[in-house]
Image 1 (cartoon, rainbow, N blue to C red):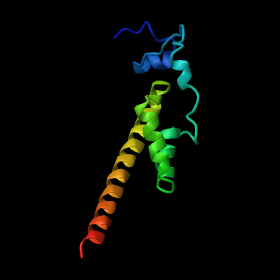
Image 2 (cartoon, rainbow, N blue to C red):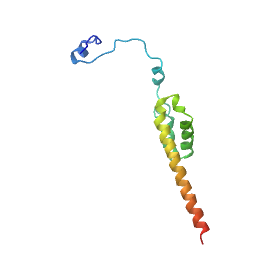
Image 3 (cartoon, one colour):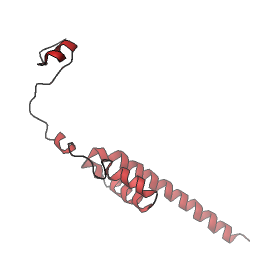
Image 4 (spheres, rainbow, N blue to C red):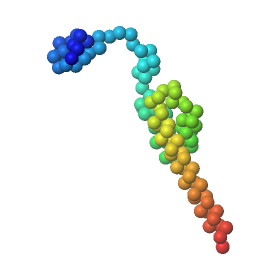
Length: 107
């Protein structure tokens, strides 16, 4: 076990490695800020709000298909969940409209 990385005696004794420092990766700095909407991001916020206003699911699906998550990869799961909810809502509306139209055409 290489102990040269640890400068702390407690971590050295426990066998844990501690980074001594160095240049920060500037790509990781953009993830230091919390996500908007109480930390859950646009996708999850749209998913929750979509149960009251289903248009929000379609808005998040639009963002998902236009790869909004490239700006912040943490948004991908919420936007994907909203896109699935938009698809399920669309299928449910199409089935309901088909049943209503079929019943009205039958004598």
